[in-house]
Amino acid sequence: MIRFANVSKKYNDGFQALKNIDLELESGKIHAIIGPSGCGKSTTMKLVNRLIKPTSGTVFINNDDISKIDPVQLRRKIGYVIQNIGLFPHMTIADNVAAVPRLLKWDEQKTQTKVNELLSMVHLDPSIYRDRKPRELSGGQQQRVGVIRALAAEPEIILMDEPFSALDPISREQLQNELVNVQEELKKTIVFVTHDMDEAIKIADNIVLMKDGEVIQVGSPDFILRHPANDFVKDFIGKDRLREQQEIPTVKEVMTDNPATAYPERGLAAALKLMEQRRVDSLIIVDQRRKLLGYTPILNVLGHYQDETKTLGDVMLPFTYTVEPDIPFTVALEYMSQHNLPYVPVVTGEQRFVGIITRGSMVRLMAEVFPIEEIFPNGEVV
Amino acid sequence: MKILQDYFEFLQLRLPDIAARSGEHLMIVGLAVFLGCLVAITTGIILTRMKEGPISGLVFGIVNIFQTIPTIALLAMLLPLLGIGLKPAVFALFLYSLLPLLRNTYSGIKEVDQGVIESARGIGYSSMQRLWKIEMPLALPFILSGIRLTTVYIISWTTLAALIGAGGLGDLIIAGMANNDNFLIFTGTISAIILALVVDFILGFITRKNSEQSQQAN
Image 1 (cartoon, chains in turn green, yellow):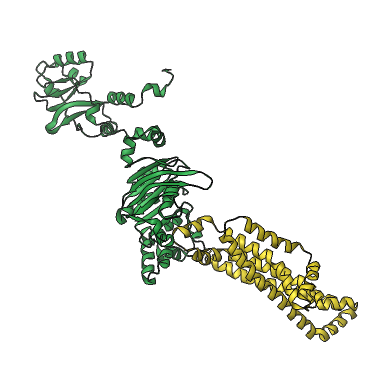
Image 2 (cartoon, rainbow over the protein chains, first blue to last red):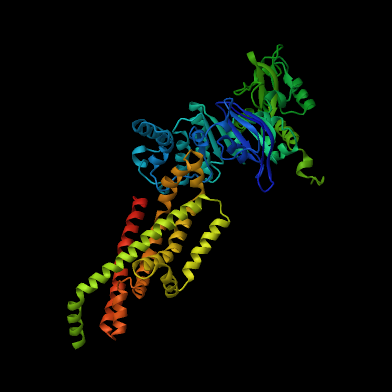
């Protein structure tokens, strides 16, 4: 666990980078420190390996005051990955990865085993990449090496300073995924500085939002998205993301629950009358216990209209697709568009009919999500 | 054609003398550059360890001034202090070697990518380990090219050392001027040029070897 107790940092030029930070970062989690530039996120991170010394306050790692630990020794126990990668250009990939174990005077055999293991873990075949120089690798590959170099001496804590922000979007995405996978297995305490909210949401267990040297909000990505502490947080998250986060409504919330239904015993003339009243072109047939039986399109009714002995039960068609009320509404839409259905019935267990989803339901929902004032802010609805 | 024949005769006669003067010449150059490296590279390293500020400015200022003093004047000034002979000559040339060596060492180390330095610091290299394992190897091409450059021009300036009795190829030139012997002047000059070219070639070879090593497999 990393704990910041009332930490402030004032630079010599008078710039107050951090103002009384109190923060606890739980072990075994990825903590994303995020905020606009100059908010003190990198400074906060660099306090942990004493690259920056606080003006006042104390930083603890597992309850040890780190100002009492020799910085060089401390840093060897903390992995460090920076934005511009910082591989040593004159050393081979293997030597780069082996850097910290060698500083710690590990047994060479053990070091080599570890190097090969880590290279394989990030899908860099040791037999190919071990003896290459950093410049022969792509940016994404280089940063993979940067990450495993930080892991080599098996530190408990890893600091990452915008490690993926200089990479192209595809490599960035890959490395984010790999980091999440690696973390699944290794359970390190990772302090990850970023300015990219998407990245933070994607990888972090815990987000620390900072602004002007202060911690504004701490919480899981989900918590921050659902309960942004103030307007700054809302702005920082961005409207789009807040909207994305709104839950997809379930079928139950969207469905029309009083569609035109009829019992199968009803005659065709009465059915036609009902359709006329309700202005629909098909009736849903249910029994007295509202068990879904099928439907009759108006064409079927008209086709058998002359035959007075026929009832709706005789001319109805069965439903091939039904949905349940608790699934996301989008699944129902999916069905409708895939099978070109005008609507799908919603049934609970034992085929009990509760409502239908129509294209109209979707339109209503869209109107709620995107209120018309937002699209036409001046009220110029055309 | 007669002149060529005469010159070869002259060469045969003078060969031991030329060789001896060349040896002296190389020794003076070697001593001056060696001392220069010792002082300038050490100073350069120390300067990079300090915060940029008045001290590095001052050091560079002083070394710069040495560079601007005309060679003859410097030799003349050293006469009363160090007398004549090898000592003042080596000392003067040593002073001249300082600036390029110092500048190349200093900027070679300073030019090392900040990301590399930061990550070395961040993963727990001590200041000394950083210098020897990271900064010096990366600055080496700069330092080597500084040494090469310095050596070549110190070879040409060493011809002046003969003026204060330090010997070297300058002796041939001065003797030639005194006796109005063009062969002698010509020989001294050509020898100094050949010496410079050969040394330049050798040092260039070493520099290339070094950079090939650090860029292997490229």
